[in-house]
Image 1: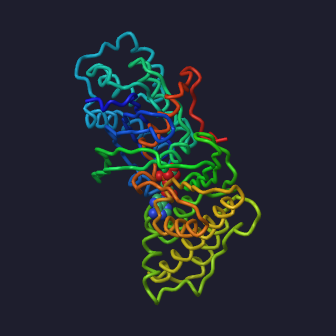
Image 2: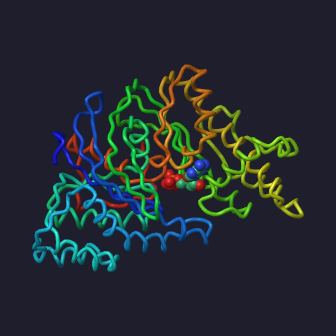
Image 3: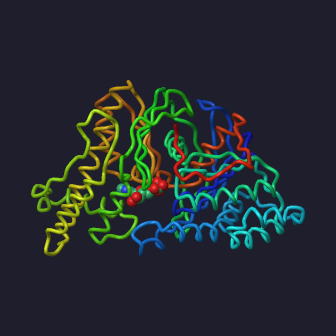
Length: 410
Ligand code: KG4
């Protein structure tokens, strides 16, 4: 059933260790008339696989994306009721498809029978993450999008992953029903844009990026601050590893930090970690020294008791929060901001969210942040950002489309 909305976009995300496919139906421009409905959304996380490496191992991740894309596409289209059961004739494209996917033979072997068994779904365009991220992983998604574009005869929008996080966090989301299992599926999510006054400041905090981005107008971005070394999420993951906590470490550190805050016995008073670059007159970040300071504390312990781990986790989370909040407030003041958006995996952190919200409120600023399951990587955000570009006729030239690991927002 069509919802009287005007465009269906299929989003594909493979920039790190999540293989995700999402189908949305959307209408309107970037403003109060915009509406979307998520018709299908399927995401397979590889975190259990990468746990033993303590981080994402790019070549393993690439292989997993190649294995998971067709199953996620199938699930997404089935959820959406968008699967067409007639037989498609792909013989004219077989050789071209083989060539496009020559580096992903396993993906080709799955895609070919899929395309032979199903007709073209009711989709207007494909939005795919072109960067930034792990380049071998990005290429799998980009080549998959090119293959679908060829077989289905529809255009591609190349999406910047970070724009996806920003646009997602600007959404006022309704009716989230989530089934948690190995594969995350959301059914019946819909939404519109929050009432946003520009300029907007975005704090992007994930495993690969830590940036402050200024938007003077919708869909325009100027990076005004970035990390000079580790990303915030990377620091969470590395500190978690020092404390023998599983990957990804952010939620585990956060849990221990909360326990420490609730216990009068586990104070951080006996240790003090640095707040790197907090008082420097710029919008940049650095987390590598903080991570090394934790390492020194850990190495100085004969054994790491549970209470010591909790105290370290708390002081570390406090230090990261102080720096993120401090730098955001500096930018708010300098650019006269009234709306701050935060996105990326670390923005799922309750303590960081709440501290940021409270401090911004005092500064007369609203904080927009999406439900935690959409703060981490997903394909809904890629479909949403892709929709706005499709709506403006900004399609990629498929022959020139490349994955770009270091793609920047400005
Ligand atoms: O955005 P994301 O899903 O992937 C990319 O890096 O692109 O972010 C993953 C990162 C990981 O470093 C993970 O440890 C961190 O987000 N993370 C958290 C929390 N949940 C995820 N960090 C702190 N607290 C959390 N609750």
